[in-house]
Image 1 (cartoon, rainbow, N blue to C red):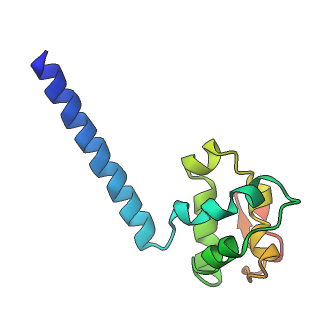
Image 2 (cartoon, rainbow, N blue to C red):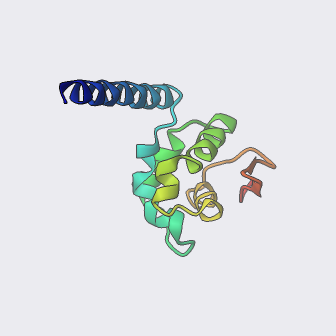
Length: 115
């Protein structure tokens, strides 16, 4: 019994380390999924305008191609999918926030509005 508890504790520790490394890596790249929390409503319903905080957070992801790539990569994140984010709708947020997107930028096979 003690062996199973030790093994389970070790597995939990490894999972925690891997998860923390993923967060650090994504934050270092400026792609922090938690920065999109204020954008949730606007990423599910095209009629909802993004909040000022949402626009600020997206603008801070980076200008031009780096920011667009960051947003695109976050749309395929498991947390985005599990929270019902609709990529086609979410990709319209930069245009609603008047944030420039590189001309002709395509994300997940979808041409980003305003590009």
